[in-house]
Amino acid sequence: MTFFANQAWWWPYVFILAGGWLATDAWRFLGVFLGDRISEDSDALVFVRAVATALVAAVIANLIVFPSGPLADTPLALRVGAAVAAFAAYLAARRSVLTGIIVGEAVLLAGIFLL
Amino acid sequence: MLSAGTMPSDAPAGEQPPATGDYLRWYLRGSLRIVSLPALILASSFVGFAALAMQAGITLPQAVFMTGMVWALPAKVVMVGAIMAGNGLPATAFAVALSSVRLTPMVVALVPELRTPHTRKWVLYLLSHFVAVTSWVIAMSDVRAVPPAMRTAWYGGVGSSLVMLNMCVVAAVYLLASGLPPAASAALFLLTPIYFLTSLWGSARERAGHVAMVLGLVLGPLFAILTPDFSLLATGAAGGVLAYLYHRWARRRAGP
Image (tube, rainbow over all chains, first blue to last red; front, side, top):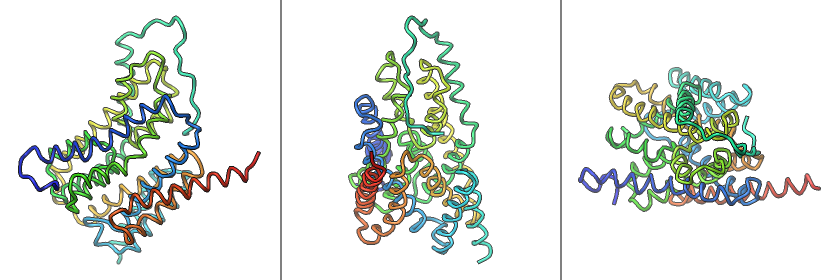
C-alpha cells in the first residue's frame, strides 16, 4: 500500500502515523527506557552511535549525489564541490555551521549562474 | 560546547516544591530559543523540506501533520523519498526506522541531564518526542545553566516551540512558494544536506563518530548503486563496524 494508493482522506495520515511517527518515536521511547540502564561511557553505546552516524551520513551523501527536484538539474561535480567547500569553511571557521552554509550556497549559486 | 559528562541533578534535600509560575517562566525561557541561529538554520532547512514535500505531491495539511508527528528532519526526508519512489507502507516504515536509530542514543544521553529523582516517567516520554538534532544540540550545550527541577519545563519550551515554529514554516512555504526561481529552489534543497553535514560532525562525541561519518558519506552513494534496496542498512552496518573497530584499535594503541 503506497502513500497514494488509497483515495480515502485519512489514508495518508495513517501512512504518516504508522510509517513515520511510530518508526521514529519508538526509538525515542526506547531511549527514555534505556536512559536509566545504560552507561553513557559503555562500549555498546559507542558502537550504536557509530552505526547511527554512518546511517545519517549516508542519507546526507545520497541527498547530494542523487538529489531530487531542481538540484538534480545541476552537475554532480558542482554539488560535491559546494558540499566540500561548505565543510572546509565550517572547519576553517572553527566549526561555524552558518559559515559552512553560506560558503556552500555561494559556490552552488555561482556555479549555476556561471556555468 | 558539548561535554559528555553528567552532573548530579539531585535537588537539594528539603527544598520547597517549585510553584507553577516557576515552571511557566522556565517554559517560556526555553521557548525564546526559537530566536537563535540554530533555530533559524533549522527553519531554513524546513523551507527546503516543504519544497521537497510539495514536489512529492503531499498536501499542506499532510506535510504539517508529518512535521508535528515525525519531527526529525532526516526521517522526514527519507519518508518523502520513499513516498516519491512509490514504496509501500512496510518498506517506508523500515527505511524511516533505520534512519532514526540514532535518536535512541541521543535520548539516552539527554535523559540523565533532564531528570531529577522527582521527575515523572510520562514527562520524559512526552519530551523525548522533541528530540532531533537541533533541540538536542541546544539542550546538551545549555541545560546545565537551568536549575535541575526546571529542566523538563525548559526543554519542553525549547522543543515544543521549535516544532510549532516549523509547522508554521512548512505551511507558509506551501502558501507562498509555488513560484520560486529554479536556482533558489536548488539552493534550498542543498541547505538540508549541508546543515546536517556540518552539525553531525559537531555533535560527534568521540573520534569514532567522525570515522563513522566519513565512511557513511563514502559508502552511502556506493551502496546506493550496488544494493539500492538495502543501501542504508548496509552503510550503517559496514560503517558502524569499521568505526567501532577503529575505536577499539585506537584505545588499545593509546594503551594503559
